[in-house]
Length: 325
Image 1 (cartoon, helix red, strand yellow):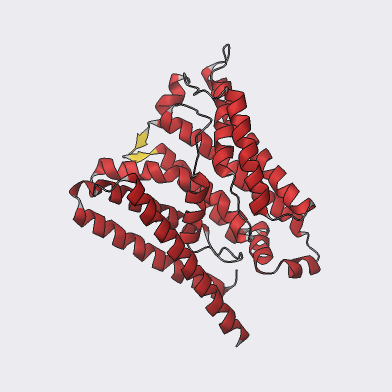
Image 2: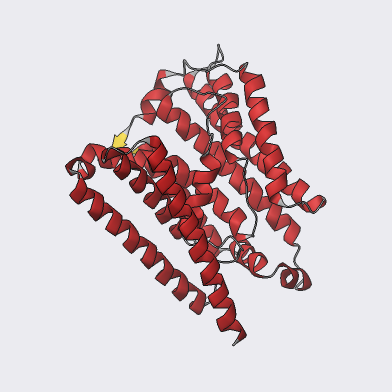
């Protein structure tokens, strides 16, 4: 990204940050419990899973793609790792280590398969990931026999409940993922290529680079992030269920779009995605404290998502007109 692009990105993120601060002030005034330590810790826990998934989704959307399968892939990764955690004869350390590796590998494999199919047969990711959504969900139900899996090692369960200075360890993991993702996008050749492909794939191809490999890797990263999110979700609930993750794909996409990443590709940032996830978490928690039911909260969240997409569309048109002039 050049200096102008970075400046525009910072201004955009500043706007998102201001919106987040306004929401926090509004809900803080509206309900006294909103700014309590316990509730803040609860919000941080709630946004952690979505932040990790959205971080991976950012790579895909920057390319102009989309991944609708992350919710189902999360369930599959959770079930696979839960099976390992409940195996007899393994020490706690071995079981936990193998479960984490298996979850991330499973998610990476799903993402790699999705990306490879998209590129080999030139099928839009919307269709392919819709198919993967059903495949992963069916596999999760088959492996688990459609049952909830529990009885994880005590050390695994206790780690998920750990707080460091009232900050959930799950949230700390999410922050580390965001930092790594940001460095990858802004400080590596791979990241620069992701932006370049999202802006003009043909130019990248003519420059001698192969966009196919970068796009497959982006989907693999999204899958790996989903696999990690599955472990974090299990740490939070201490169970694995084949119907976990329903609707998570929409939450992740919403966080990315609200964070300023363009659905057309080529524009966005990891910090914006994190702020978008924070806005969704604060909005959901604040509306809940105000006594609004699930249906009303879904309606309001949906309206916010639509407004974010409309703003993104107008912003893209204005930038295109300015570029033409």
